[in-house]
Image (cartoon, rainbow, N blue to C red; front, side, top):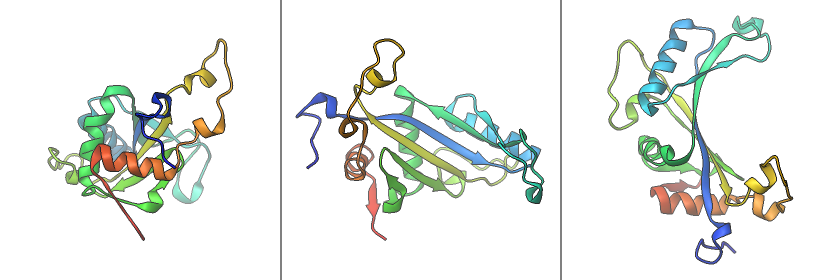
Length: 176
């Protein structure tokens, strides 16, 4: 049974964070383009993703910049998430939904409404990850007076996320 927010306000689902990621590999020019594109889309400052280990087959050394990402929280999430859902025609695969998160990809950034092709950036795709939680989780994460939060409150099920996405963003979950 899925409880609605009206039953108990602590059962209400909120979006914890939105992460937009662009992988570039070992190409330095693509790295700059990815950072420029992310700042254009979100208005924030992207961070370089660095490799954790050496991969000689791909000419990647440990600590090398191999992508860019940006994390959004709070009020900044909704307008950007709506644009990103529109880019995939508000259709998400059922396999993209897991407990506490939703992930999907955008093939080309020109699919996002309001963004025009820039020849300096070129064609790039991106991964989008939405992380969900319930109110009250801070009790388990804070530094002082930390308390336990039961698993039933920590976990946001797949069905709850599907229902939330349908209501909030008018997205359709496609069966495979």
